[in-house]
Amino acid sequence: MGEFKGFMKHQRKSQSEEDLKARVSNYEAFQHRFCNEDAQEQGARCMECGTPFCQTGVGVGKETVGCPIGNYIPEWNDLVYKGQFKEAYRRLSETNNFPEFTGNVCPAPCESSCVLSINNDPVAIKGIERTIIDEAFEQGWVEPRTPNHRLDTRIAIIGSGPAGLTAADELNSWGHNVDIYERDIKPGGLLRYGIPNMKLDKDVVERRVELMEAAGVKFICDVNVGKDVTYEELDEKYDAIIVATGARKQRDLKLEGRQSKDIQFAMDYLTEQTQHQFGEIEEPSITAKDKHVIVIGGGDTGADCVAMSLREGCKSVFQLNKYDRLPDKVDGNPFWPLQKQVFKLDYAHAEYEGAFGQEPRAYGVQTMAYDVDFVGDLKGLNTQVLSQQPLNDITMEDQERYFKADLVLLSIGFEGVESELPKAFQLQMTHNKIAADDSDYKTNRRKVFAAGDARRGQSLVVWAIKEGREVARQAHKFAVQNKIYS
Ligand code: FAD
Image (cartoon, rainbow, N blue to C red; front, side, top):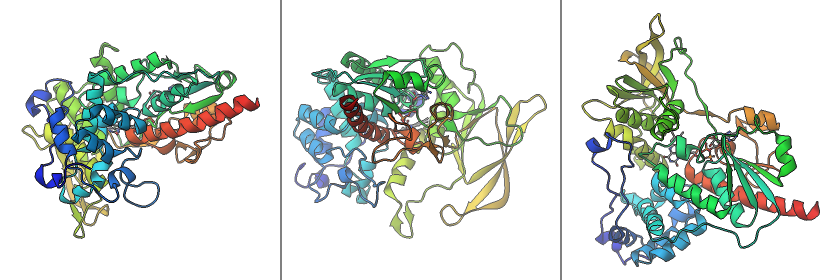
């Protein structure tokens, strides 16, 4: 595997990025793929580990750190090192339906599990994955997965995010007739309307949708299932139904003044901005242009809001984080690697891009009140500084801090699944998620399966792909058996 002692010979390299000042002037994707030679050199760094933790995971129980979809990472690292890109693509696509999505946006738990990460220089697995798939598209190796035979089964998938797309891709390739119902006017879910173009070029999403259409998947957009189409109608028409509707219910911060139009949810802002960029709406109702923006929430979505506000031309943007900076070490041991990886991703926009002439983030800050004037315009935020001695053990400090703001974007997480469809379908819920066991993905309704964020709560693209693959197997089994015995 790889080059003998290659990891000692070659340094880890990251994919190059557009210059900071240049990239905030547009909405283009700012990270460039490796050239093939760089990818080969990085592949050479993969050593012959006894157990490839990147692929199998490290840890206990279901939530192991490592690749959730079990990508054959050491194998394709080796193939890339040898310059066998086509074979590497073939091997990669055996476990991952959409490496172009994960190659762009995955926080790469595989890299955290790489043995070399002990020295903070893991193999650049994500960059290699992206090179393989980009090369495959450039060389024309990626083709529609058209089935050899069509079955007479029909499967409905509700939601066209990565979970729904993956399930559709699998089921269609096995011969089922697959219809994807989507509430938005275009497919992709958060890949299209959540994750900004700078992180994931929308042409990449469109290209995949077109391939799936060419393979026979039917996209039925602008249809809100549960409202425009009933459970009974789907039950009548389909042999299995998969609910992959995401977990978009946003957490609110209900303090006095919340009703001000200047306090908005992050997702509404991000969605409108993307729709506007692509000509789907004329003017967004929420804009950061010429405003002092405060993003409340230190996660991924908040970081995307910082990036978007900068590109829109805000006067300033500041991200408030309730928690302290994550430490490198806890009690002398390296901090849990996956956390560090996610933390790095959060910073990609917020820390680097926001750092022009201002402090981009504040840590350990709790919002106490919105300062809204008598006509409802936001003036600022009153906050309290928190002191955090051990991890997550928070106490108030007697220190107040005022932040001037014309726009607040709330990005403090998601509460779970929006309730309309589960109600209309009479689906059982557990902790605001659709109840379905991960052994069979079955809900309480016959024929109805659930997967992705709708089942597991807000997560990652790679987990949505994993669930899409697994739910497809279950729905396949059910639909075929049902046909035979009906
Ligand atoms: P979604 O992508 O949410 O798709 C659900 C789809 O169902 C949507 O298209 C929705 O319109 C549709 N739908 C809902 N209800 C109905 C209905 N009644 N009828 C018809 N259609 C319906 N993950 C990463 O790995 N890396 C990242 O960089 C990253 N960045 C993120 C940035 C933001 C701003 C957010 C919010 C999330 C991010 N994530 C990221 C998380 C990731 O996007 C999600 O975990 C993933 O998209 C979940 O996939 P899904 O298919 O389950 O749901």
